[in-house]
Length: 372
Image (cartoon, rainbow, N blue to C red; front, side, top):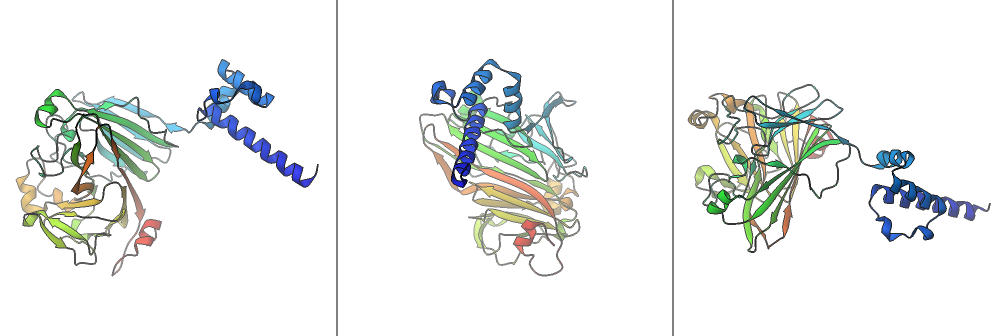
């Protein structure tokens, strides 16, 4: 066989198996190819596939992306709790109440998320800790209850998510639809979907809002990340320097950040505007850095109540402020507006890397690469 013929034959065989694999996976409908127009082996494969032959079933199962299993348990209050695990040893727990992640543990079984020592994990109160979702209102920027009602509702498992399966990750799809009660206070019909995926060293959340109303839908949104830290006074946040922010301790006055990094020696309640897609939260004592990546959520809120505010919050321990920090992915300054039947999608990924710093600003590239 000449060299050109050999290459051509190899390419044809590659394309043949590629098409077969795509058909078997369901990415190409069988109806797009007449059996007579296919290579005999391909036609045989398709015929066996349609009959459920073991060989093709085994081939299809190997080609299909593998998704890790999830477990559903009920806690002492009878509330459904979803447990996600992955081969590396990390885990996450998600409540249908609030559609909220309440635990994310690494392979050493250390919980990376803060949960208040006085948190109430049952209706009708919001849960102080984990990762709550704020919808359709962030903070008090509207007429609804603070941070909206999504975190106070019972979500359901979403069996019809259009998102593809996650490769080698454990994930769950949740759904919240507008109820008659919600329509009384916020007369807009919607569907809020949330995919939560656990992978090795990372936790990903993909929220999607669809306007199912005949009128335009406008909302603000937030994913609040209650991060567990060793000592708040030893933590710094990088990636938000030189940006403008609304200072909620000064009646939302607009201020420009002057520091090289955000550090903490008192109460902080800020909404940074038009932020980058990556933010680093460096815990000097634990030599650990949280890396927050996000898309479709242009703003980032930073919150720690400090001692006086902590004592004033009924569901917050007096000393809890020392071991927590909230850094949120959010859409605050400019509301998201959807036309009828239009959909918005956001994305957030939390990961951790080992890091430390001696003095000055830590190179963000080194943070993201996991280098000190």
